[in-house]
Length: 203
Image 1 (cartoon, helix red, strand yellow):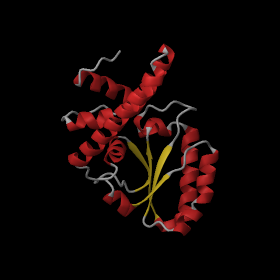
Image 2: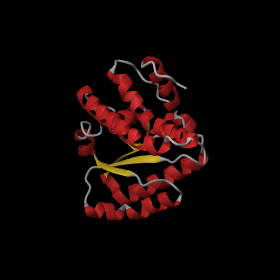
Image 3: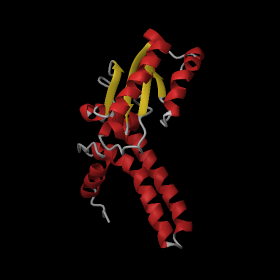
Image 4: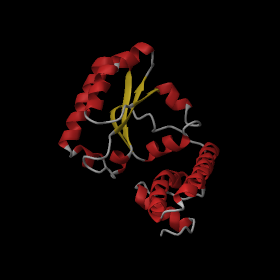
């Protein structure tokens, strides 16, 4: 996975430049830079997908964030989203708050710099179940609301179903895990696995 990613010379140069800027900016305070999302799962679409980064610092003060403005501004200029900033302590303590997001990062990530903050992170099933159930119920309620105005048009229904599948797909992996399954890393494979296991109509 990492080898395929680094074969992209443009991406490698962008990462090296950013990490150099971050090291100059944060010094010893920079603990890790982690790539996650489609570029880490191997599902990236060239020239369309973003590079999502998590930056871990040993401490974060307003001054640290002000100093980050210059390297982050250049990263944004290349068309990428703002990195997510955590302290190393927050990463250790937030697994109960972001179990789905951290679980996704655990399953597919590339550590570009520093020590891997997810290597020893523990995510408990009861936290994963709570967030998964909350997200599923919230999305179901939203889907019902949006279905009402979309029901008058086949085209609108198709758009709604397509958009809804994208939002629900992120929850299939944790749902499968809660039933003792090992979900595939790739999103499309995970959707197929969930449809088969939960006996959903893939059409």
